[in-house]
Image 1 (cartoon, rainbow, N blue to C red):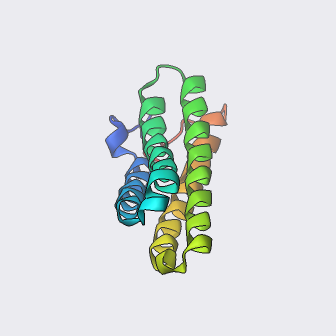
Image 2 (cartoon, rainbow, N blue to C red):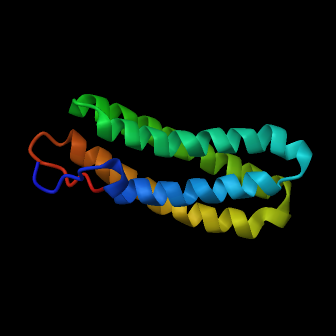
Length: 130
Protein backbone atom coordinates (compact mmCIF):
# COMPACT_ATOMS: atom_id res chain seq x y z
CA UNK A 1 0.00 0.00 0.00
CA UNK A 2 1.70 3.10 -1.31
CA UNK A 3 0.74 6.07 0.90
CA UNK A 4 0.10 4.13 4.05
CA UNK A 5 0.61 5.74 7.40
CA UNK A 6 3.12 3.87 9.50
CA UNK A 7 1.43 4.81 12.76
CA UNK A 8 -2.15 5.65 13.67
CA UNK A 9 -0.72 8.96 14.93
CA UNK A 10 0.08 9.82 11.28
CA UNK A 11 -3.60 9.58 10.33
CA UNK A 12 -5.12 13.01 9.75
CA UNK A 13 -8.51 11.63 10.74
CA UNK A 14 -7.11 10.40 14.06
CA UNK A 15 -5.49 13.81 14.66
CA UNK A 16 -8.78 15.66 14.05
CA UNK A 17 -10.70 13.15 16.17
CA UNK A 18 -8.12 13.71 18.90
CA UNK A 19 -8.69 17.49 18.65
CA UNK A 20 -12.44 16.99 19.07
CA UNK A 21 -11.96 14.51 21.90
CA UNK A 22 -9.67 16.81 23.86
CA UNK A 23 -12.23 19.61 23.51
CA UNK A 24 -15.03 17.31 24.69
CA UNK A 25 -12.99 16.25 27.71
CA UNK A 26 -12.36 19.90 28.59
CA UNK A 27 -16.03 20.77 28.17
CA UNK A 28 -17.20 17.79 30.22
CA UNK A 29 -14.95 18.89 33.08
CA UNK A 30 -16.64 22.30 33.39
CA UNK A 31 -20.24 21.10 33.22
CA UNK A 32 -22.46 21.64 36.26
CA UNK A 33 -22.35 18.64 38.58
CA UNK A 34 -25.83 17.39 37.64
CA UNK A 35 -24.69 17.14 33.99
CA UNK A 36 -21.05 16.19 34.55
CA UNK A 37 -21.90 12.86 36.15
CA UNK A 38 -24.42 11.85 33.49
CA UNK A 39 -24.13 13.56 30.13
CA UNK A 40 -20.50 14.52 30.72
CA UNK A 41 -19.56 10.92 31.41
CA UNK A 42 -21.31 9.73 28.24
CA UNK A 43 -19.59 12.44 26.20
CA UNK A 44 -16.20 11.41 27.54
CA UNK A 45 -16.82 7.75 26.74
CA UNK A 46 -17.90 8.50 23.17
CA UNK A 47 -14.93 10.82 22.61
CA UNK A 48 -12.51 8.20 23.84
CA UNK A 49 -14.18 5.55 21.69
CA UNK A 50 -13.74 7.54 18.48
CA UNK A 51 -9.97 7.96 18.69
CA UNK A 52 -9.44 4.52 20.22
CA UNK A 53 -11.28 2.71 17.44
CA UNK A 54 -9.43 4.59 14.70
CA UNK A 55 -6.15 3.62 16.33
CA UNK A 56 -7.20 0.03 16.96
CA UNK A 57 -8.46 -0.40 13.41
CA UNK A 58 -5.23 0.90 11.98
CA UNK A 59 -3.33 -1.63 14.08
CA UNK A 60 -5.36 -4.62 12.89
CA UNK A 61 -3.84 -7.03 10.41
CA UNK A 62 -6.83 -7.39 8.11
CA UNK A 63 -8.68 -4.75 6.12
CA UNK A 64 -12.06 -6.15 7.20
CA UNK A 65 -11.17 -5.52 10.85
CA UNK A 66 -9.95 -2.01 10.01
CA UNK A 67 -13.25 -1.27 8.24
CA UNK A 68 -15.17 -2.58 11.27
CA UNK A 69 -13.32 -0.26 13.67
CA UNK A 70 -13.72 2.74 11.36
CA UNK A 71 -17.48 2.05 11.34
CA UNK A 72 -17.52 1.88 15.15
CA UNK A 73 -15.56 5.15 15.34
CA UNK A 74 -18.11 6.75 13.02
CA UNK A 75 -20.98 5.57 15.21
CA UNK A 76 -19.26 6.86 18.34
CA UNK A 77 -18.70 10.19 16.62
CA UNK A 78 -22.43 10.47 15.90
CA UNK A 79 -23.14 9.56 19.52
CA UNK A 80 -20.79 12.31 20.69
CA UNK A 81 -22.40 14.84 18.32
CA UNK A 82 -25.85 13.92 19.64
CA UNK A 83 -24.72 14.41 23.22
CA UNK A 84 -23.24 17.79 22.33
CA UNK A 85 -26.48 18.84 20.63
CA UNK A 86 -28.42 17.71 23.69
CA UNK A 87 -26.15 19.78 25.92
CA UNK A 88 -26.61 22.86 23.72
CA UNK A 89 -30.37 22.44 23.74
CA UNK A 90 -30.44 21.90 27.52
CA UNK A 91 -28.11 24.74 28.46
CA UNK A 92 -27.43 27.53 25.96
CA UNK A 93 -24.42 28.73 27.99
CA UNK A 94 -22.41 26.03 26.22
CA UNK A 95 -23.62 26.82 22.67
CA UNK A 96 -20.36 28.44 21.56
CA UNK A 97 -18.23 25.54 22.85
CA UNK A 98 -20.57 22.98 21.31
CA UNK A 99 -20.59 24.72 17.93
CA UNK A 100 -16.79 24.89 17.89
CA UNK A 101 -16.52 21.18 18.64
CA UNK A 102 -19.21 20.28 16.10
CA UNK A 103 -17.21 22.02 13.39
CA UNK A 104 -14.35 19.63 14.17
CA UNK A 105 -16.61 16.59 14.34
CA UNK A 106 -18.17 17.48 10.97
CA UNK A 107 -14.73 17.45 9.37
CA UNK A 108 -13.80 14.27 11.23
CA UNK A 109 -17.00 12.58 10.04
CA UNK A 110 -16.24 13.42 6.41
CA UNK A 111 -12.72 12.07 6.83
CA UNK A 112 -14.00 8.85 8.42
CA UNK A 113 -16.46 8.41 5.54
CA UNK A 114 -13.64 8.87 3.05
CA UNK A 115 -11.43 6.38 4.86
CA UNK A 116 -14.28 3.88 5.08
CA UNK A 117 -15.01 4.16 1.35
CA UNK A 118 -11.34 3.84 0.46
CA UNK A 119 -10.99 0.74 2.61
CA UNK A 120 -14.15 -0.80 1.12
CA UNK A 121 -13.03 -0.20 -2.48
CA UNK A 122 -11.62 -3.47 -3.84
CA UNK A 123 -9.64 -1.74 -6.60
CA UNK A 124 -7.95 0.94 -4.58
CA UNK A 125 -5.04 1.07 -2.24
CA UNK A 126 -6.28 3.59 0.28
CA UNK A 127 -4.22 6.48 1.46
CA UNK A 128 -4.69 5.54 5.08
CA UNK A 129 -3.33 8.80 6.32
CA UNK A 130 -7.01 9.56 6.66
